[in-house]
Image (cartoon, rainbow, N blue to C red; front, side, top):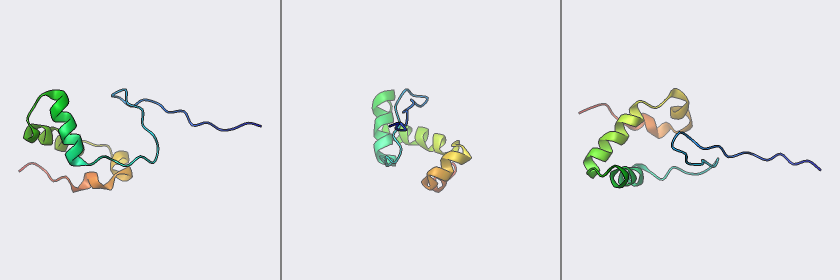
Length: 73
């Protein structure tokens, strides 16, 4: 009997995304960026906000919380 297997493909960062996985949240991603890039949490927040504003319409459709990020102060 044949079985359909979903293939997990890496995203642009090489991370493998699994369908149905919840987003870790803004704070967690901000901390991850600060740690990896070696910048302050404030700067990491700015990087994340910029990326959120530049997200594609498809990304915003799948994650409506991206629409909550306001423009520059």
